[in-house]
Image 1 (cartoon, rainbow, N blue to C red):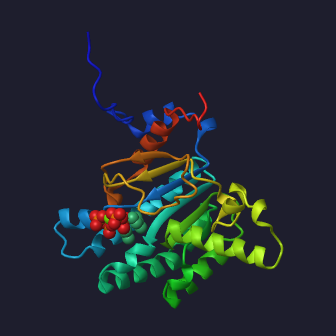
Image 2 (cartoon, rainbow, N blue to C red):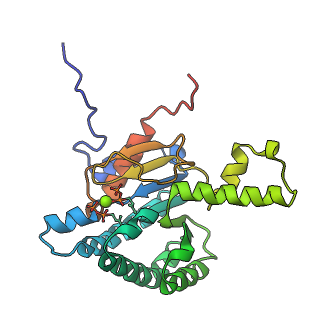
Image 3 (cartoon, rainbow, N blue to C red):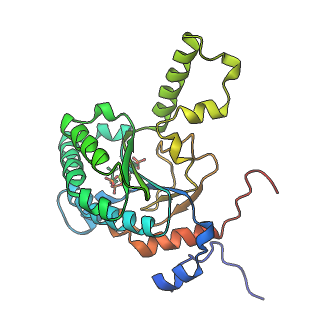
Length: 259
Ligand code: IPE
Ligand code: IPE
Ligand code: MG
């Protein structure tokens, strides 16, 4: 008699990217994937770098590879949690370096996004970003607006609770002008008033670096998301890890409260 291991074997156990991909069912891909890109600081430390920012810089390669792979796999939207509202509490030096990196990324990535037919959007308290970042964001959103493939949605100065607060404010204003009655508010009203309702709720949320928490990411939209947590640190997250997450997702039984 064999004893079942306490934890299930990872989906990618011993498999190559090609082998995992062959097992994926293209008709059951998630439409919208969210990624909590975590572990950049730990990666930098493990590499022996003095500066955490070296980890953020290395993470850009992961962003590029994963965006491209998600587009090729036919996902409709990829939301990347790049900077939280809570991240403003980090040392100013790290914030400045992150914002400079973001600005550079936005300008540098236009050709790559266009050649992959990817459209850029963003969600969060964008007005809190430095003017240079806001300008770069507007530039890249405009330069990719005509693309018809996947949407890459960057969560910047993003907080899930604050998003709900802002949605409630918008709804309250509608009530104040008589466009809506309190009893007409339903779940759909809330969903419609989130930052990017057109993306739909994320079907799958991936978090790197083995942290088992949501850290205020899409708390309204993730009510029925599947979670995939991997020990891989974000700067080392590659297409094979994405494929493994997708296979893990396809092995789940999404019941939505049914039987
Ligand atoms: C994620 O990596 C990137 C951001 C939150 C901006 P961290 O910077 O949180 O890396 P760790 O968690 O300290 O390793
Ligand atoms: C979550 O990572 C935010 C982003 C990935 C942008 P953090 O590293 O900020 O989260 P905590 O502090 O571990 O919860
Ligand atoms: Mg972290």
